[in-house]
Image 1 (cartoon, rainbow, N blue to C red):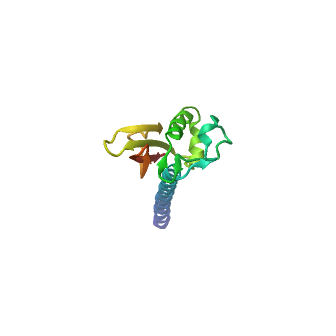
Image 2: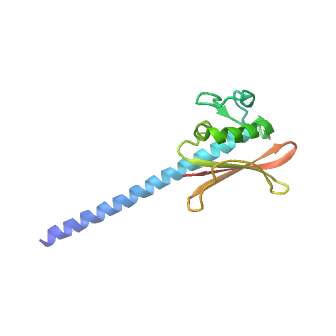
Image 3: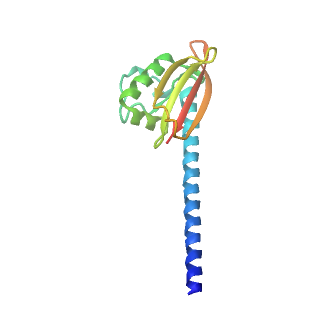
Length: 156
């Protein structure tokens, strides 16, 4: 009887330890996915033009167009019209926008702030609730001859 009880306790301990390890593995995987998505998104937005490069002129945003979104005319130099269209598309196509940015299962919030006075010039997406863990990624760029910080927060 004692051996059965001891065996049951050992099995219970192993099951609890395994469960804890699985939870930690899933949390680490989610954090890694958020980091990759955020780094990729801030790079794509500040360094790439998008495909096609003039996606902002078409006035179309759906599940097949544009293929990718970039806010730059040249690497590091943002286009104001693309920023404005990104905000517009976010209001009607948030899920598609996430897909184009490679964010997928996570949610995101984008801010473009003037470096000189820290004023937010543009923002789009959904801000993370205070109780949610988020990863924040920043990149410097130029918008209308002013240095700006492009900040992407990714959260789940």
